[in-house]
Length: 102
Image (cartoon, rainbow, N blue to C red):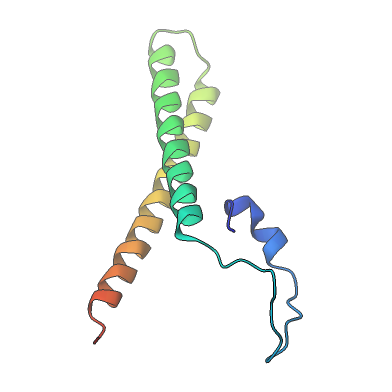
């Protein structure tokens, strides 16, 4: 089961399954885990955007340091760009699947 991007280092190790070997007891990854990961990614992106916006308002009021605002905005921008890239890949995959002959 995929639990998030942070688990990729654990999953990227060498695989020792040879052709013809059975993987008894290993459950197939479910779509629910992927949907949960995407939901978590979207929630994280929205929270970073909101926090950057709140920090920007505080800076306008003179209550926050410029460096903190820049860091928060840069982090929010990176999260948004990653979310857009993932969305684009999902749309591309959907279009490719929809063009397949049945």
